[in-house]
Image (cartoon, rainbow, N blue to C red; front, side, top):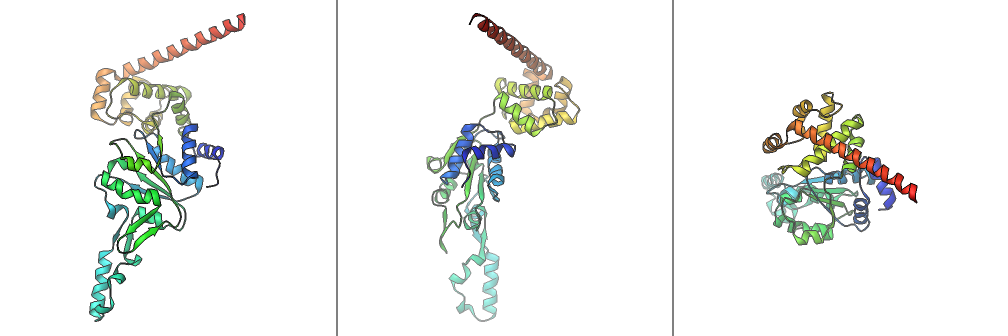
Length: 317
């Protein structure tokens, strides 16, 4: 990995990923030391996007293992092609050559069905391996990953140990639905991505949705930030929902937030019936618009006060 820290930050920016210095530094060091990177945070804040951007920056292919409850070794690593093995046995029997067909003949790479983890290990070219939403699996599966994450190798009983041809860049993501084991954390560099600040979220929206006007961007971001801070929602709107919402508003011809267009597009922002009911009961579209306007007034008052204080300081200094 011959990219420098400053070059990595520029590359992320060129690919539309707005990242602060801490994030870029952690990614850079994980690449430098060939360390798997565990990225935790709420859903939709850009964890998976890191792997996708790295594919473009490093010019590597992406192998993705999407985790789910009940995922096991046969779906993640490999399984034997039992149908092909059985066919080989039948052909051998028919040809009266059963004695020539040994176990070693049946358990060879020709009969191996590669899953994402084994494909990553056996790849002739360096790749980016994304193990997405690892928190959906159980601790047994985590333990199964230890050998891959620490040694970049896998053990197959019938074939022995297979070492990586090229060390993959490994990114693991977690939505924090359960606590991950110390063993997994110990083998990874760690990064936490939270919901963005107001200014950062504005930058992301302007970058991803350039057709949105300044007023609409500011009001949408203010509304999303207000909901995260003031309502106990089951599913907090993430950056992904912010982008979906502003695109829906644009499609409806909105140039600013109004009660009517909030009602029309609310399904792109809140994704649970209970959250919609809580919003309507606690705030409603009129209340959200009023809260945004109050916030704008407070910002204007603060800016006016700051300007006045600056002038006073200049006068007496």
